[in-house]
Image (cartoon, rainbow, N blue to C red; front, side):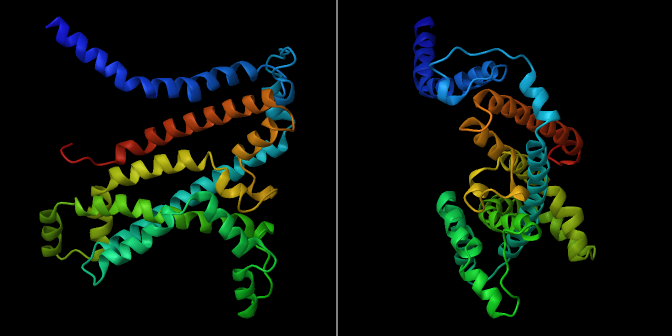
Length: 296
């Protein structure tokens, strides 16, 4: 018996060891190093050639007292995250409700909606940059032909809105699939009973459908917020050096590979980690009680 357990235990550790090595090399060790560096003034150019000078909490003090650009990036990131998650949820739910009905070529429509999600994020961002943010971009020319004039989508009043709309399109496909699966899991007898009682479609959606799919909505909201709070490539490649779309991750990258140094960037990264952790815990606390699970 002990030999069997030992054999099973050995197999378990052998199978899990590649993940453990990768986790240690690419997550655990970098986190420990960044925790040490956030209390120093180390720069990437002198990381391995000079000793690290300990400066205490000076980096954290500077973040909240003299770095107005990073404070603005916090506001931009939260605005982007809230709006992106809200738009993506509403759009994905509407599409899922439509494609859950009996339509001709329904599977074909589902494929078309999902196709943008399989395009690599970098390729998609560069393509949209050519279409929207270049002086002779196709969409800029279309607006000009319709009599709207030459619109600069990088201007303050358009920058965040255009970035939101472009990045929301890539979320609709994957979220639609998850919500579609949740809609198909709604008990048919409850829906039929409500229809016999004469409930309106809006009431059925609000009082039956949404509560029954609330676990999926909760999952998408939490993961969507966490991912959006770390937004970098999807904005950096679309519209560079724009004060109104500057995010926390962009500030970290700018300081890590230039700017104020790796030590300061590490301090910013831990501030972002704390913000995401606190926000996630608050989100769980405020919304989890409103999530309905079958059998509760």
